[in-house]
Length: 209
Image (cartoon, rainbow, N blue to C red; front, side):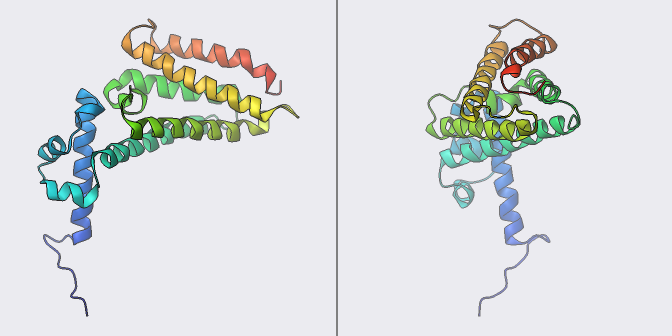
């Protein structure tokens, strides 16, 4: 018969393990925001979190697993923010919903650039992060396909629409990266207006009047 697990300080072993994992994630996120993903190292994260290597390997198999976990956490928070913004315009048309999403994400990037760089920064050199970036784009394509379906013209070519959405998302990411780096000189509202104009120009090909 297995002996019951003891609790220390009123917390179970699982609770303490979960807290250590969250501390490592928070430390990795801070370093990433300050210096980029390449600066996130196992030893640096452990030092920031005040934990030993042993506790790192309790939660993550390696550095890449930690990077992926930070990315996943931030992606989920970003998607939740976008869906909340779109939900506020659920009774309006698809372009109004898209405008709401653009306002939310552009202002998020402008107001919290360090935080936004986790999802919208440069991930070249990390196979794990590049793969997640590709998967996130496909996930967003699926979301916009689903949200737009009630407004689509009959008998449209869905493969063509999917490709256009994919190009649009990829172009949006490149545009905001250029904006963050100062190549595109515009305030957040101007950038939103310009991006919305691109979507509005394409809309008649796929959306009901």
